[in-house]
Image 1: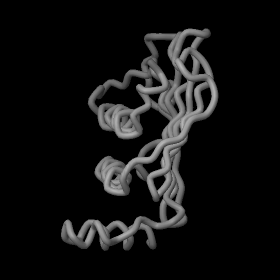
Image 2 (image 1 turned 180 degrees about the horizontal axis):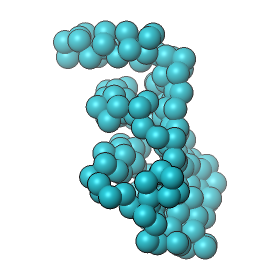
Image 3 (image 1 turned 90 degrees about the vertical axis):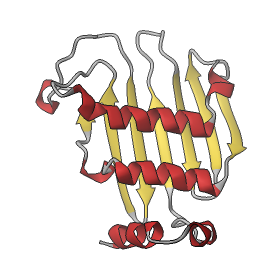
Length: 160
C-alpha cells in the first residue's frame, strides 16, 4: 500500500515538482546478466536512488572487476517509471521453466535477473534468455526494461 501511495504521489506531480521530489532513499535497481558455457557477457549493475551506478564485470566483458559512475536522479526516476509502467511487481518471479509458460528453444543462453527495491518493497524477476512464450510480446516489456537499464547506466563502456 505504501508503494502505491508513493508511486501515485510521485507520478501525479508536475515536472518541476518531480525534480524537487526525491525517490525513497532505499530505492535500488539491480540487473545481473549470467554467463552461458563461458561465452555470454556476465556482469552485475546496480543503481541507487541518488544515481550511483556500480558495475561488476564477471566474465566475457572488457572490465573484470568493479567500476562506478553517476547518473542524474532524473534518469533513475525514468527507470522507476519503466518498472511502474511494466507493472513489475505483478510479473512472475521466473520466466525460465515450462511451468512458467516457456517453450525453451535455446539451451545455451544466459539469464537476466532484474530487481528493484523501493519504499520498503522488493521484487526480482529471473528471465532465461532461451525462454520463449506463446505470446512473445509478453516478455517484450521486460526485455525493454533490461535494455533501458544497460543504456541509462551506460554499461557499454565496461562491456565492449
